[in-house]
Length: 473
Image (cartoon, rainbow, N blue to C red; front, side, top):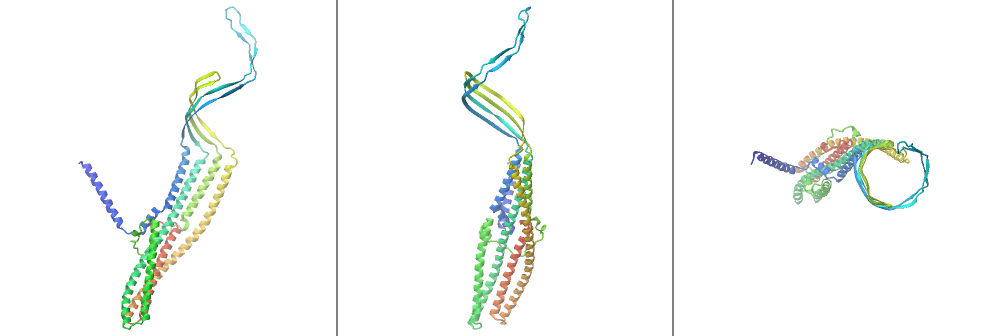
C-alpha cells in the first residue's frame, strides 16, 4: 500500500466514526423547543408549497429575461401541387421606333427603317401545371427592444417575489407560534404531573393514618369521607392530564412528523419567557412589507403597459431553400427549379399605434388594483398597530401576574407546611389540613397556567413586531 492510500483510509475512518459519534449524541439529546420547531418548519407542506410558488415566480422572471436571447428555428415543408393557370390578356399594341441599319457592303449607304406599330394578339387559354414543391431553412430572430415592456415586467416580478417571501415569513411565524404554544402546553402538563404525583403520595400516606384514626375513633366517618373526596379529585385531575397529554402529542406529531414515542420523552421546566428585542414596533411585520412590495410590483406593471406603445425592434437572419421538381407548366416540363441558398439579414420594427383600447383597459384595471392595495395597507397598518398595543399590554399584565402567582404559590406552600405540622400535633382537624393541601394544589396549578399564558403572550408580542424567529426561542 502506498502512503497516500493509507492516509486516505485513515481520513475516511475518522469521518465515519466522528459522524457515528455525532449521531449518537444527537439521538440521545432531549427534544428541546428549537429542534421541534425546526422539524415542524421542515415538515410543513404548506410552507413547502409556498417555496414552490416562489420558485415558480423565479422561473417566470427568468423567462422574461429570456426575451432577449436569440431564437433559432428549423423549418421545412413539401407539397404536391396541380391545377390550371388561367391566362387572359387584351390586345397589346407595341410601337417599334425608327432605326438605321448599318451598311452591310462598303460603299452602300445605310438603310433607315421608319417607325412601325404592331399589335400583340390577345390570349385566352388555360394552362395545366403540376409539380413537387420543397421549402426549408433556418431562421434566427433576436429581440433588441421591447418598448421597455420586458424590463418593467422583470422589475414587477422581483417585487412580487419579495412579497411572496414576506408572506412565507408570516406563515412561518404562525407555525412557530402554534408549535411553541403546544410545546409549552406539554411542559405545563409535565409540571401538573409532578404536582399530582407529589400530592398522590402525600394523600396515600395520610389515608393510611386516617384509616387508623377512624378505627380508633379519633376522627368521624364524615372527616374520613373528605379524604376519599380528595382522592377522587386527584384521580379526576389525573384522567384530565392523561387525555390532554395524548391529544397534545398527537397534535405535535401532526405538525412535526416526530414520533409520539419521542415526543413523550419531552421534559421541560416551565418558566416565564423574557422578551428583550422587540424590533421597531409593528412596522417590521411581514404583512406590511408584503403590501409594500405588492404596490411596487403593480406600479412596474403599470409602467410596462404604458411603454407598450413604444415600437418593438427585432433582428432576423435566414438561410432558406425553395424549389420545384418534376413539374409541368402546359407543354413546358420543369425538371428542377430551385433557389439555394436564399439568405437574408435585417431588422424589423413593429409599432402598434392603436390596439382598440385594449392597453388602456389593462392600465385602468392595474390602477384599480393599485388603489385597492394602498387601501388595504392602510387598513392592515391600523389593525397591526392595535394588535401590537394589545399584545404589549397583555404581555406586561401577564408578566406581572406571574410574579404575583409565584408569591401566592410560595405562601400556599408555607401554609401547607405549617398546617401539616399542626395536624401532626393535633392542633387542627384533618379537614383543615386537606383544605390547605387543596389550596396549595390550586395555587400551584394557577401559577403554571399563568406562566403558560405569559409565554404565549410573549410569542404573540414577538410576532406582532415581526421579530419572531426560532433562534430567539
